[in-house]
Image (cartoon, rainbow, N blue to C red; front, side, top):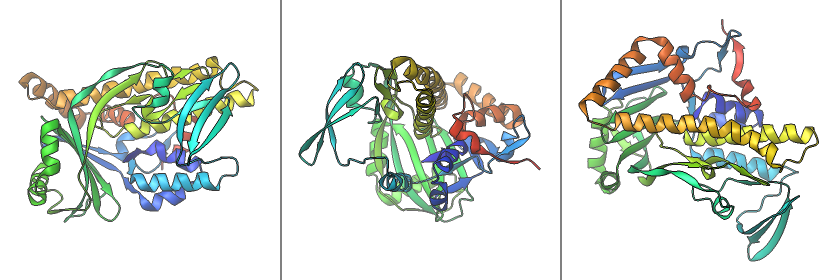
Length: 367
């Protein structure tokens, strides 16, 4: 999974980055193309410096496996003296009251009742907590699914992240440690299912064709997994005593790899709001407190949802006027640095209001 450069700052603020960094790949270049034509190269230098003359922290982004992040975070939770970790467990009932919320949890057949001032729902796109709270959603399911797998290329990936656009859908090829790559191949449902079930040699031959031979001969290094794709935005992110974050609040198309990053920014923004409220002696579950988080993140997430939807629709299209328009857009990106700068700021999470936890992204002055 891709992590824009600002997300590394969140893990540094938690004191976990030194454990994660040896197991992730840093990339300083993104290669974008339309059916292996009209290439655009995004480089770290395109981000330039900020208004104070500070250069960003040596990377456009990072790629990490899900297991690396989960293991590090879970170990940190287990070692924390002020966190009680109940897992596996199932939420059975939630009772919202005026000054608290009570939660019935089934842990190994034992029913526990927990009481807190705020419940944070991070239970995925089908969030039962969101549904029980009566919070509606709007959005749509795409005509596409994703085939995700890991490959080992013959050539060195040189820490370059590739984004290839085809009329059937985008393909991301992301560098991993050990000269491996994560492939996220989007295609119409039937075609994606066929790609998952295709003979391994045929699948790799087609993948080599789609990567234009830039990585040489390819080997599969993991199973091919199939995921449906949807866009979803919750009507509300908060109610009294309840806040939604991550996929419980929103889901987006995987183009650009923004889903996890949106969730991390949700968590950092909510933490900032709650810490400030606690320091001022306010009730962290009060609706006015939580609405400041909703106003912050719901608007910014809508921009990302719209951006990813626009990218998928304009590139997953063979209509000649649209093809001409996107080729013009790629030419402008390739020819004019200000356009690359703006696009990179959006892709790397540097746009919008930055949570205080991300302030460490500015690490050293430009030379």
